[in-house]
Length: 129
Image 1 (cartoon, one colour):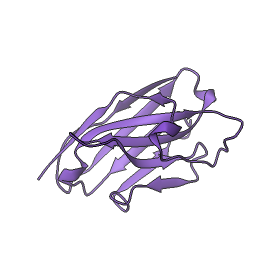
Image 2 (cartoon, helix red, strand yellow; image 1 turned 30 degrees about the horizontal axis):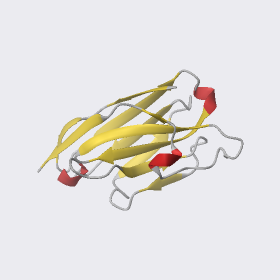
Image 3 (cartoon, helix red, strand yellow; image 1 turned 90 degrees about the vertical axis):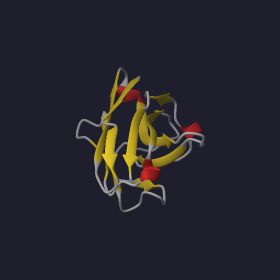
């Protein structure tokens, strides 16, 4: 499975960006998707996660009400709409998907980095004040 993340860039505080994560190659073998970010000198942290079905979502407290994660109709693309951006949102953003398992449900989402099996390259988001 290959993941292609895109949409990062420079935004002013209060602005918006939309990230995309497109999966290819064996997408019928994956389930939940998550967006993580890593700021310079900090640990990688979960930003948002979504179930394969798209019916359940989870957000970090720091982005609730500002970010929205969604899944495309074809299920192989996940978006992260980021609004009311703050300088502290600056960092490399990574998407990740979890390999399908008989223990998983199409309604499950996951928030730990170790829960995911495939990672895309980072896309840099820089928010200026």
